[in-house]
Length: 156
Image 1 (cartoon, rainbow, N blue to C red):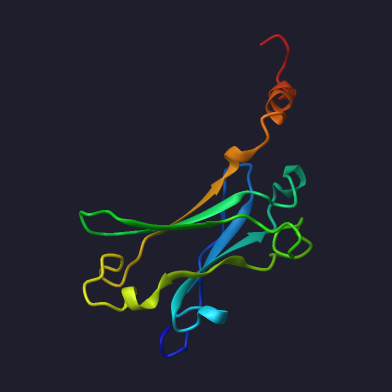
Image 2: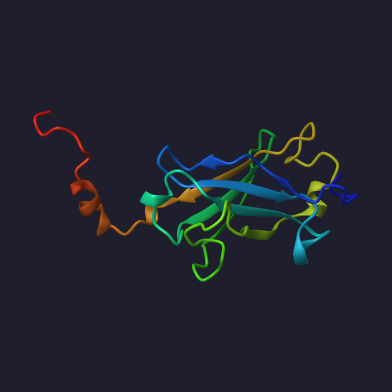
């Protein structure tokens, strides 16, 4: 369907980065998007309005990494990352159900995917992981975060 352009993109169901985290989803353009059309597979990240937004930091500034897994014993991986451009309309506090997608248009060359027996597609299935690096929180915030009252009784 992607090559015939009957279905240009696949957007996966929304998920939360943690029980109290950001709501997000990923999009895959198997036949590429924009200047990567017909040359690369494109992957995108979308922030969505979530129930935790009032307590989260915006604009969203965390590094996003995509990883596509080799399904053979060699277990090679293709990874690529991006850091949000906080001036774009993709990462501010949400004013609608979802922000504009942002990501990696040239994630993976189609010539590799189209090869017979490529290690990344087995039985019409690919495994792609999205990771958000929350470890880049400034260390100066850690003492403050740890000092916050979690609302527990003082006699516990």
